[in-house]
Amino acid sequence: MKTRIAIALFVVLFAFTAFAQSNLSVSVLTGYTMTAFEDQESAAGTLPIGVQVGYKVNPSLVVGGEFNMPLGGFSFEDEFYGMKVSSTINQNLIGAFAKYTLGSGNLQPFVKVGAGQYFGNRSAEVEYMGEKESEDFDIESAFGFSIGAGASLTPSIFAEFNYHLVNREDAGMNTWSVLVGYKIIK
Image (cartoon, rainbow, N blue to C red; front, side):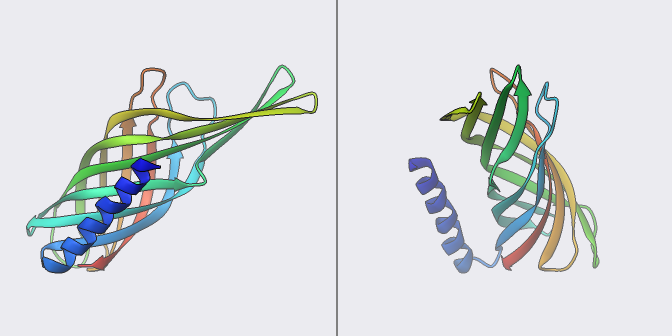
């Protein structure tokens, strides 16, 4: 809970700063995110939401911070020896990024790199012979990286693809995202 409050304060601080600076932008994002976890037999997708706050260093380079979270989490279901197992993983990101624009004109392609802290929780439910048991627990926080590319379609709308590389001691929790963003402050 303290982490979520800190994230909310971080986003609000950057939003208020954006009003005072003409080089700052605030964008909201959504799209589709899918797991690419190591050693997984199946994948799960979900709808993410996010906020990016960027500072235009020069006409081609924007640096900033971002927060992304999956709505509803990544849900998996499987069956082992007559036990039905359902689990949901929520992996959030708070990080920094740099976008470099490769061209000018109406359609402006860009490349993006980022780094940040990935954190969240996991819930699991096991059903066996009509009995159910569930457990919720935090997943280990980990530092990770993202690489991506996209394009500014209009001065306010952009699309981007990101691949997140996150390695934890027990398993990698990589994901990819296709996102559409709208600059509410530009």
